[in-house]
Image 1: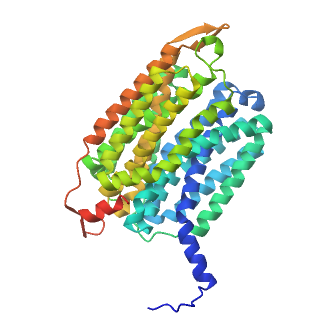
Image 2: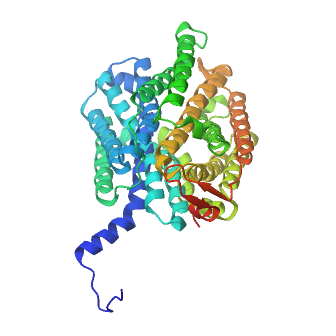
Image 3: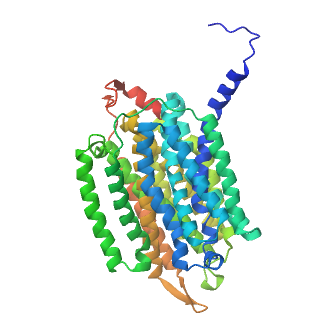
Length: 495
């Protein structure tokens, strides 16, 4: 239909076009909010026992509760999004995150704070749900760059959240920080409600409640044992009992999933090399990525009396990690172009190799601040490439009706990798300490061992990436039975 040269769009047409144009930035803003919510409590941890009147062990649950709920809810909400509507579940996740932040702003009771932080963990499902929405709504030539940006929001939000939260904590009442995140959450929720359309792609069937409960129980046992092993003792009855319970529960859960008509996780699909290997790579990359921020934050805050520490404040520490977050924002389109030209396997392998090279820089020099920032930024660059490639690999390997749940499992594997990294780094540093002013402080050798460990895991992730099979010339989409050529798969990578 020809358009008159003097055609003036009606307000309705203009608003529809504006919503479509802003959908990607709005979803990316939601991903950044999710990462910010996970990191804002970090600057508070040393002071929370005094502020809440609780023990240090109780306060640590403000981090553990978010980890556990996020790990459990990510695959569950991803599956619910595939079945009942991704926009609907996305709004629910953002709403729970905002309610949790409001609860934190209104109370100093440690019990309520822990419950509130558990609600905020629901936001972990925002990224896989958003990636699935992008696949359903965008033309193939725009999907790759949008997915790359969405994947990078995890690092961008973490890099931005730490210094901003530290500034608020240092110069204002700690509740002000949660009032600020509540306001940001309301903005994100409102924008998502206005700009994001509901995807018509659905996976029919009945929600697998027994599967959701079984997975939740198994993950809680696993992550609780991993996250608390250093505190409770790795050989304690509690930790060994949790590992044993996890093994039993997940064994039963696997059998239940294989028999279920509409399983929570399609294990037969997940066992295919084109899906399983990206999940393994996500686990390893999550480990390698988390070591960068975790170890850097501790190293630069170490006292100058150690001979290597810089004695930086938490605000200055956050600023050290900020260049990495900014770099991730600007390099996400580059990673999409590499995937379009060479394939996401190459991008993933390149990213993990760059992470390993970042740790090599850290091993060579971790005394000078500028070298520490360069090494941390190189690791962030590698993380950008790796995290942008992982969802693209999943999108190419699963039917459209299972993208949210499959990417939810992929995000879950990253979360498990981060939890294992935290426990492994803690174990290394605990065994390499020296007394400084009467207090045990990790030695530089301990930090270097942590870098060697994380860099080695990154190289293993690179090997896993190179082992991912290439795409067949055509494939049948299980949910529709239609045949999809390799050209469509390649287009999904974006240009």
